[in-house]
Image 1 (cartoon, rainbow, N blue to C red):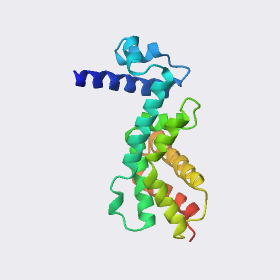
Image 2: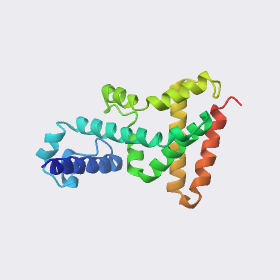
Image 3: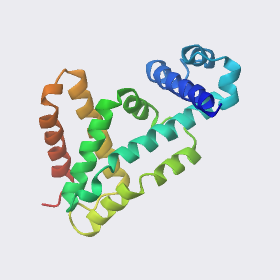
Image 4: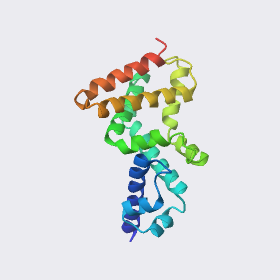
Length: 192
């Protein structure tokens, strides 16, 4: 029984991700999500009482997956630059492998439909990354810039790199483009 519950919930989340990314929040009805998921509208409302609940749950899940992906194998890196490069590589590769999720995060990161509570809970998932950047500033590895600015620069540039690789058919050059993208970021952040 539990597998069936999780299957329905996942189907709803997958359908919502696809439709929100394609049509936006207002362009997507709960009826469309239900139809795409292959469940009754009442079933959708059983799991998510409102469309706002659904988008907040989806945002929390996708951002949680992203945060875990970004810190994968981070402990194997020795110095600050290598750690930051590892986070960058992980972020770009996750964006390329999870294109709809990456688009969804970009589309809804500043959306008024994502509650402050959801944003605060999601930010807890990024503690390791925030701490690394704060330590880089304290240790003098990077310029003393506001954390939010560094995060925004990092993320917006990653969106550009993912778009260039996937949107312009440059997947054969992806490693080169990922490295060049990081060097642009590093040049902007580094004190040296």
